[in-house]
Amino acid sequence: IELLEEVYQIFLTVYQGKHPDIAKTLAHLGDAYGQQGDLKRKKYYLQQALAMKIQLYTEANFECVITYNALTDCHEALG
Image (cartoon, rainbow, N blue to C red; front, side, top):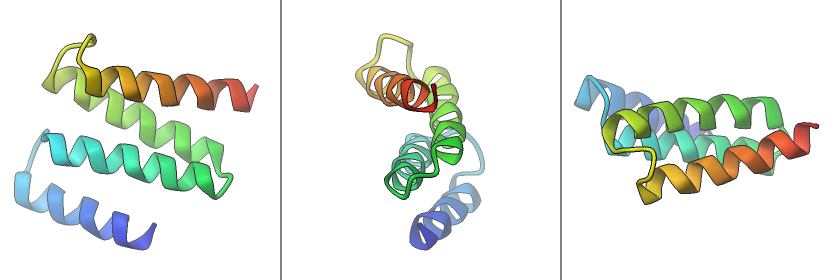
């Protein structure tokens, strides 16, 4: 997770705005936290990733659908 956080900070500096690499890194952070059992952080990062992906693409884009699916699984796990 520490490396993903570093990559995220680097991408924020390099791209200075919304970018597919930033959105993907947010989703990866969510997945990593989920694997550690921190579902609240997983949800937070997936929501951030989805919001950015929707702005970059459209809701029907495959990248968005994947993140929607992961977020749905997270909601179900949280109850």
